[in-house]
Length: 464
Image (cartoon, rainbow, N blue to C red; front, side, top):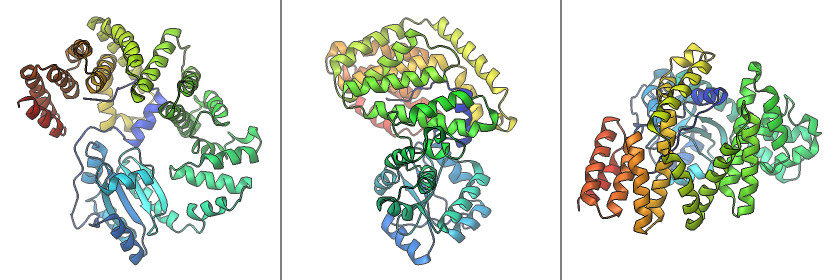
């Protein structure tokens, strides 16, 4: 089973992670019907917009997925709360939709939803008024609601400014305000950003007044704003008074280089994206990035590209090199790395507020960090093995992947990795062995409170 890889994060990024609470490991949220809480509208997307028009209220849209833990937490804590219910029932038509099912797929795509939970506040005409990502507790939810109420009363909403921009308005003050609103909504306008960069001197691009608007509309490292933003992060990243700005800009430049890699259509475009990724890594690393680390990073990007473009001969070549290195790392070495990395994490965490340390997310993250190096190795082996399972048919390739999956489940026998191992066994015709491993995966998934539907289906197939 494909599973995400955990990677050590610097303190500034950890703070962003903890404050937005976007760690996701759980079942689907419940749909709360408690009369003292939020009353959710039942019906189609078009019907809820029509109801919003009828009542002259914005729509609050809770966009969730079936695997999102914070979604469930928000549904459990906030939706039944009397204060939340009072505010939301008075000011919004509330609606819940799964981003991965039915109409939710199109709604999530239309409003560029990429993280969960995402709360959208939308007019009856379908115009986005406000966006909040993650769950910051009941106080945070009430604060975001107040922002949405204010946005609904804005006499110059982004929809109006869209039309002004399309009609040719390009003065710097207008563009600054327009970009700031687009950034706040999480819907960047790269063309408007380039117009703004033309309208103001470069020295002003990263000024206090402009930096959030510029960073919030950066979509590619090929933008003229990329290097100035990167240089600004380097100069202010240790300034605690500007931590929020640092987080905003770091997220912007990181997403830009990641997006360029994912969207590369040719090897030339890929190599350009890799160069920018290495530039970012070098700029933000507290110490020089070794040539070996740079090569590993570049090859990881190339493997993703070859897999996405179905160039399996080139993927196999790099995957073999990567797996050979991973397989050569001893268990004792990994345990030592785990201990050292965890100690560094705890040293950095000394500067984290006690209120953050007391949060469930911090506790989960701290627990994960105790074995982070081992999990990275097992996770990388899992990615390689799963790619072979999905794309290779030659028994020799599958047997090679099985050696990788055998090692990874020795290191980290979590359900998703056990499932990969079982699937490879089954594809090689060893269904009886596969069923035993899949049953172990299912048992562990149930104990962890995970969604077990995929494991149950796989096990049933293996027993046929």
